[in-house]
Amino acid sequence: MSLPALTPAAELAMVRTKYPDGLWCTSPEPCEHRLIATTAAGWSKSWAGLPEHERQARREAYVCAECRQAAAERERVAQIRREQAAAARAVAAQKRRDAAAVGLQPVGSDAARRTRMNSGEFDQVNVTARPAGPRRGGRPQEHVGDLAQRRAAADRAAAYRARKKAEQAQRNDALLNGEAAA
Ligand SMILES: [Zn+2]
Image 1 (tube, rainbow, N blue to C red):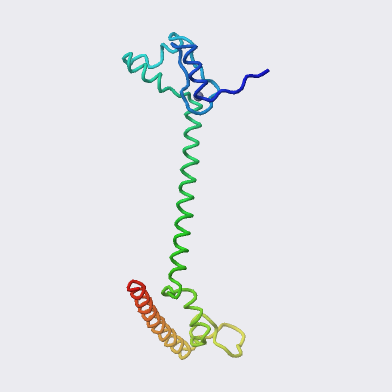
Image 2 (image 1 turned 180 degrees about the vertical axis):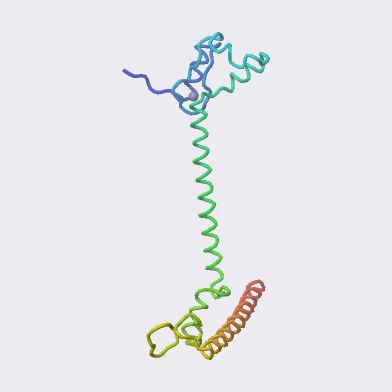
């Protein structure tokens, strides 16, 4: 019949009582080698250069290498979990802010851009697109007139974007001020 497993604290208390001059692993976690030395001679070389009270203090705080390693690993995992939890909280907080700001369209947001593009206002603005119409074979030919037109269109588009951005910023400010006043 096997004895019921002792808690780490009970196990430590037991070896302390049984081997009062020994050396034990004082980890609060389960330890495979709780009893390190049964007599003072067994650990006489440990911390040999230190004064006796200092040696006793070290003995009272001794944790075996395996338990130290296990504790370091637990701390490493806990640190990763804390970081993950903090990241998740940051995402959740951002989502709450986004939800609270319904009606506030971020300046230069995708939604704002799509709205403008769908309006068809800038069909001519894509400066990288090939000019419409039938193409001849051979090297594409760049016409100075086309280029100038497209540059002008791009300038108009940039001005429009700047204007819309300023308007959106104003709307956001107004909404935020309204919120603050409410
Ligand atoms: Zn240990």
